[in-house]
Length: 441
Image (cartoon, rainbow, N blue to C red; front, side, top):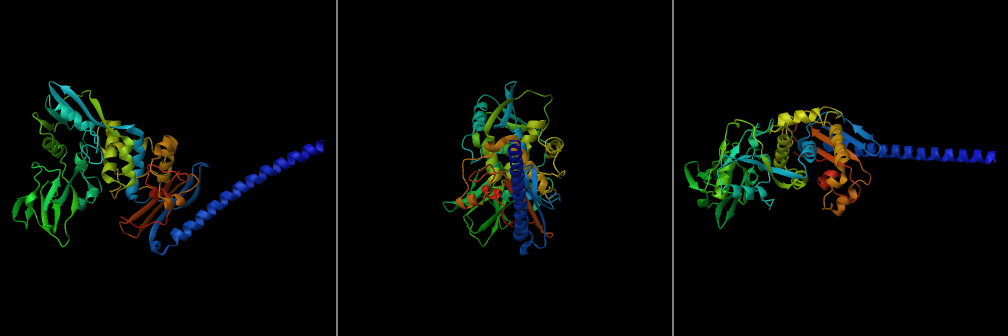
């Protein structure tokens, strides 16, 4: 009987060690497979021979790194700066965006912008803030306070020469119409949306004569805005003009209040005051949109404007002012104090050339998102395409690969974030697949 007990215990121990050996063997096999794939598909790729490359792959279930190649080195992350921005927005903006704060004071409505980019944005059909301002303007003047705005219209380290491009839309305390003017041809005439005499949508043809916008009938033109105002001018082009979105000059609250007046045509005044309020006042809140309805397009199409305004909204909610520098400093000292390496973080979107993150930093932030918000928060209703579903990892994994070639400004970074097969999430399906990196700006 003792012999049988001894034999049973020995068999049990053998099975335990055998299974541990299989787990270890599988883990080693996985790590070797990843290392082989990284070497073949990335590191030895001819197009990347002169590139600076960093790769980090982490298994959150086992809480261990599966692979690192220069994972602790700093890279300019470009649009993947939106990952920490998204984390901050998910944590501090609640389930719905604060669209406006206000108070009735001596028969006048005092209003404070919150940086919400959804106001009169065509992507968002319901406009509770606009409806509220419309009603307010029936009973008294509406005065915007600029006391919480502590930012510039363009971010630190941005390429100012790109001010005419839609991807570098100006930031502001109270965005309106997405802070862009859309130009298009209708009935053989050039049109704009929004249309406003207050922002001087006039055009100089051949640099000599100013014309109203709807008198421009030449379809072979290009349109550009002056750097510091809202005068637009045309020039001859070989290409037929179809449609173009150009950021307008925000000038703090100036352009927003002018456009709001043009839209509402109120009998009372809608204006702003440049100085701070004489004393702090308690403001009531109007919410605008579900938070994730902003974050999904921000991450899916890498929307710079939404990202910039999201970080400013986080700053406003946490600190009472809109300031990239102050909120980034706060986040790095609190939520991100335990990152593997301390980032140099400059803006919300990644337009700044000053941003520096390591692959391990971004993996750590993705892991925080999974742990703190859960997959149900991250999931979305749309499914990846069939081809993409087949490529999504079957085991929850976090991976970051970063690539830079020589002194070129072109960057690429791919991320895989904790996605079981056939699931989808807040991030674009394409950003959740380990692929051969492509060099893009």
